[in-house]
Each structure stands twice: as structure tokens, then as C-alpha cells.
Image (tube, rainbow, N blue to C red; front, side):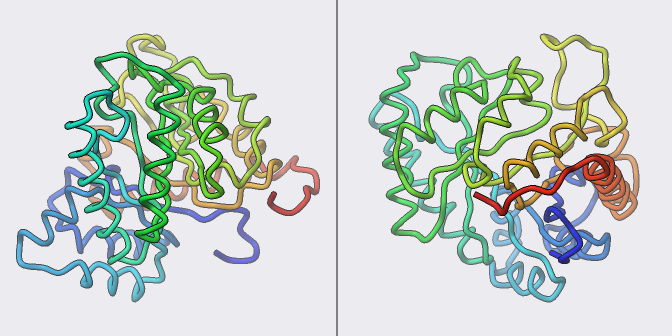
Length: 291
């Protein structure tokens, strides 16, 4: 990250997932587009290996392209009540942690997979399970980041994710927040201002239109930051004010953008996020160092 840049600019590979490129090519596209970080998905790493590649190929591509590996997106049942399913979930988490470590990253998203559509939700138990996941991360050299999904049955809000992070008491506990999921789950953006920058491991940036309404909007409705009605610049201003200096990862699933050449789409996403950051910083007063 340049000293002039307030954040790290990251490409979540979902943004160019449907163009016909290999996982390795997506790393190259992120670098060519001008990003300083990348956030791939487990399925891409598996695809690369299934095709005869090695994870070290992706690490070299990241290093050669000047990219940090900001995180990895996977799906594993770390929070479910069923002990057998949870044990399998932790085995998958361990595999994913080994993958992210091998490509040079240290953070793994821990979404509400398995509790997003079913089952009971006891916050105290989920806090314990996240603590166990953090302790697994200690052994693997990877930090699991609690991710909330706005449309999830459970763990759909910033407040729930923050309670898990605070409650588990682990020194590296942190959460993954997202402009779209804040809106979809009904979380107040002002809640971000109650956090410390160190409590956020990664932040997904996107935008959403005025229609469809909040209860019906889907991931595929996301648009470039600044092109919708989300308060993106105020959110980024708040993040900077609380001391967050990590990655802003552009994560979209828009079919219109998938119709663009991948490099053009990646560049458009970076230009959009830079524009929102410039707007946010234009009225940003001096702030203390990251907490």
C-alpha cells in the first residue's frame, strides 16, 4: 500500500468469476488492473489443483504481481449444533487454513454456513465455537474472520458478529463486514463507529440500487461502489476514523459486469472504489493511528 493510500485496494475474485479465465489468470488480472491485494475463493484453489497446478503457483503469481492475499472465501459448518457436522466443518476449515497459508495469506472468512437457513442459534454456544476456531487458527497461523450475511436466518447483523468477536476473548478475533450485508440485514452503518479498527479483519465494498426493496434484494443486484444509494463514502470515512487501514475488497455478483472483459471489469471496480475513497477523505479530519 502506498503511503498516500488510506486503505489497501483488493479484488474479490467473485467480481470476475464468470468470465472464462483460470484462477491463475485472475491473479494476473488483479495485478494488471492495479490492485494491491486479492481475495480468492476455495473453489478456485481446488480448481487450480484439480487441473494439475500447485498452490505455490498462485503464491508466486501474487508475489510477482505485487499482490497481498487479503483473505480466502470458503464454506464450512463451524457454528452448527450437530457435533458430527461441526467436526467435519472444522476439518474443512483446517484444510482451507492450510490452503490460504500456502498461497501467502493469513485470513479465512468464517460465514454462517450451516446456520444461515436452519437450526437454533444460541449466541453463547456460537461464541465458544468461534473461540475453538480461533484456537485452530493459532495452530495453523491463520485468523478466521466472522462474517455476517444480511439474508441469513442467523448471524445476519453487525451486532451479532461484534458480540461473537468480543465474547470469545481471543486476541486476534475480528469480523468481516460488507456494505451490502449491512443493508440487507438491517444493521445501522453507524454501528461501525462503535468498533475499533483492529476488530475488522476485512471489509467488502459494493453498492446497491434503490429497487428492489431491502427484503427482496439479492447479491446479484450489487453495483459498483458509488453507483447506487448506499452511503459508501460515509462508511469509508467512518472506517478510517476508527483506525481501519486494511483491505477494501470489491465483491460483486452482477451479470452485467460478468458480460464485460474481466480486465475492464476489474479496472472499473478499482476506479469506483477509488472515487468513493476520495470522496470520503475529502472531508476527513486528522485521526489517530490505528487502534
